[in-house]
Structures are given as structure tokens and as C-alpha cells.
Image (cartoon, rainbow, N blue to C red; front, top):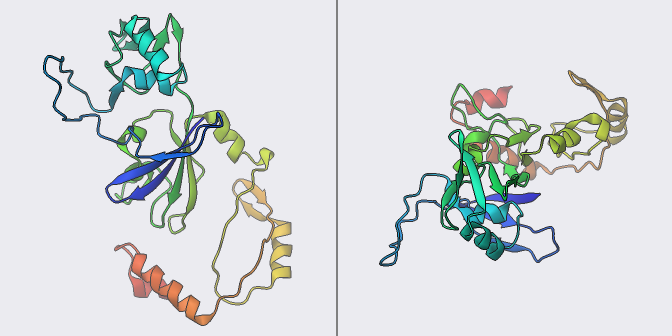
Length: 258
């Protein structure tokens, strides 16, 4: 799996890429989030190749699929042993600098090299819908994804979080992984932090969680980790933060009266 962590940082995304082969953790700005239309001046006498949006060097695409090292991919492309399938026909690539789409069907010596499954780890803020499209134009998952990822046909959200909640959110291109994470038979634990009004009786709450909460998907039990009483000044601070972060479509006074 390729795992990428998306962290908002000014006008771009910092991406943390971890190799599962045991190599050290590296942090860098990913080339996948950089513009493929780099306008740097080419060296004199070099052939200028016009880049299409979301196209990348062929040796990078091949290496990202785990075919081999960058130099091995370079050699295979130079020897014209790599073909792609696009626009209804196969085409042999002429060299490592050819520009191709990251998800194009790709073959080396006639054997298909499929893309490595992708898993994105994202911290969803409040006031973002856990859907890819919204008819009312509210912020949703498609608006926070870089265009490269938004155009991936197999990439989909894993589960959902409420509009007014924040926390860990996953995107996956592997349907089997998504099934194992979401299906109750696999008992994958999820941990939530809730701020509630009034006094909480831990024993009574645990009894209710032991009995389970019934939803349209069945009965769900839970384990109470801990109850932390908040001081009045902490409540005032949280309330102020909530009002400051409410979307414009909400009336703050009406919201507090609910």
C-alpha cells in the first residue's frame, strides 16, 4: 500500500510518505501535488514535450507501481519494452520522459503492471460533508482533495463523519480493504470523543452502551473509555470556539437555543 497523509499547509499540501520496506520515514512535498505543467526553461537543443494536466513522467509512474528502482524503470522505457492502453489502442512509450496519466493501463513485456492500492489519511475538519458531491454547494470531500486524487476513479471515502464533527478520515482505492474496515463482522474498533451537556453517570452510560444503540444498520455496542468533567471556563471556551467556526448559513442565536 502507498499511504499518504494530507496536512493542510498554506496553499499546498505537505505529504508524508512511508515506505513499508523498513526504510526511514521521509517528509517532503509530494510531486503528485505539484503542478505537472512546470514552466522551467528547457536546455538548448532538448525536445520540448507539452504536458497535459495530471500527466507525469513515465519512469515515475512505473516506479510508483513497484516495478523496480527508478534506474530499472528508466532502462525498460529506454528499451521500448513499456506500452500503455489509451483511446482504445496500445501505444509503445518512447522513453522515460514521456508524460502519461498516473492510472493509465500499463504493460511491461506484455505483462500488466497495475497501480499499487492507495490509502489516504486525512483529518476532516468540522463543517465538511462526508460525501463527494453536494447539491447545495457546501464544502465536501471532493473540494478538499487535490485534483490528482479527485480524478482517481477507484478512490472512495471509507465510512463517514458527521458534518459538525472532526477526526480521522480514510480514502481507499481497495474495495476489499474498505469492506474489512466497515463490516461489523471484522469488529474494527473506532474511538470517539463527545462533549455533552449536563452530568454524566459513568455506570449508567456504560450499561446503556453494553445494551447497544440501534440504528438502521443494526445494534451497536461500545466500551466507555473515560469521563472527564469540564470546568465552566472550559465550557465557555468551547462554546465560543463553536460559534466562531459555524458556517454562515447557521444563525448563532438560533443554534444555541436548540
